[in-house]
Amino acid sequence: MLTFEDKLAIIESFPELKRKDVSLGRVNFHFEESVMDKKIVVYRLHPNGNGYVYAELIDDHDNYNIEQNGMVNIRDFSEDELRSIVRKSIDSLSQPSDETWVNDDNHTLRLVYDFGLWNTYAGDMLDGTFPTYNEALDYLHQEGFERQ
Image (cartoon, rainbow, N blue to C red):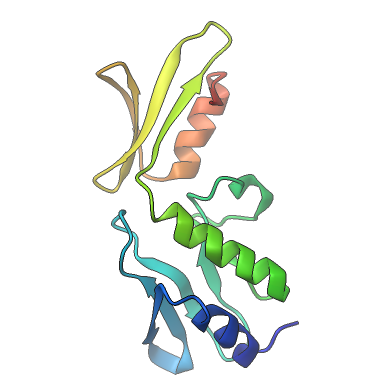
């Protein structure tokens, strides 16, 4: 397992991130250039090695155990895993999120991050609003849609 110092060194190697010391020796890292309201990439990295990385918007988010707040616990991550998820998190916050989803009947919905919510649109008509990306994904999957 990587130590706190190991994790700090890896995360600090990303010049896009700005360190913010918080209480109890914990450290957050912000991505100030985020196109989303979300700016925190690394949350509460603790001297005991525990910490979280924001992963809700990354393309292969299904490969991670994402908690309700969109964060993944990185306590047991290897160096390669940590570098990979931090890079993916930064990349996911670098581009506006607008995805196209299609079902077997060739109906199309757009999933758009808008003002802190995830909205699905059928053409110009609002189809649904969800507080998190994962809830929007659940809805789309239940309705038989797949990302294009």
